[in-house]
Image (cartoon, rainbow, N blue to C red; front, top):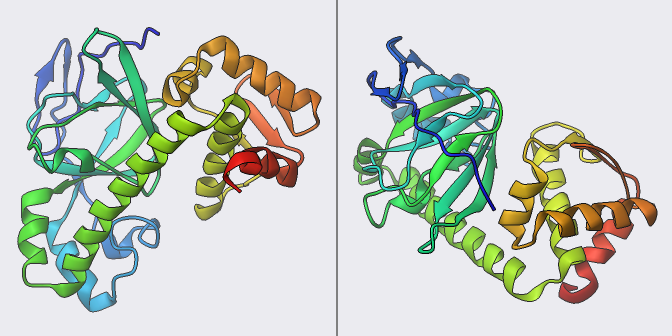
Length: 260
């Protein structure tokens, strides 16, 4: 599968030039305590006292245009990136040169956690629509965690979440058939949107069918055929990228056919 390549990147703390694009405007400052996403983003679960040091970081807030990369595979890791709005896909290049979609991130989620161990980004993060992000200096966050138990637990929770997500992806690709993979994917999107106050039953998929197929280990035709089959069975209504879940219980039973 061909995934579009991107030569532009968004700088976390200073303007850089890649290709023909330069970012020169200084990042705005956005403290965690005043962010509308604080209940589902980095400070989730922290007390007011534990959150106070995070405000001292004064994360740099930046806008990202559709198709731009926040960071590239192999870049030196310095920042975690919190998604304030929009949707991103993570892409890695396989040894045979093929590009593989490894995940999708939306508002309130963090990008770059898979880079902590090696010190370099293990994937390229590309915006699927115009978006806003906060850049979080990981070194400063780690220093604060040394003296703040709440932040220590936060960092541990972030690492654990990344492990759980990777295990979930392995199970998805290793044990499920096409129906189970697509239903699991749609239910996951539905659950994440609901947590953000959006409709859990009707939403717009920002990624292409090819992106979905790459993520699920399926070809584009199988993804399209499975969605059409779900529609014929009365589980969904699909109009291009717009999806409405008609029978949530039925879709859940499809996912739980093997894992339930």
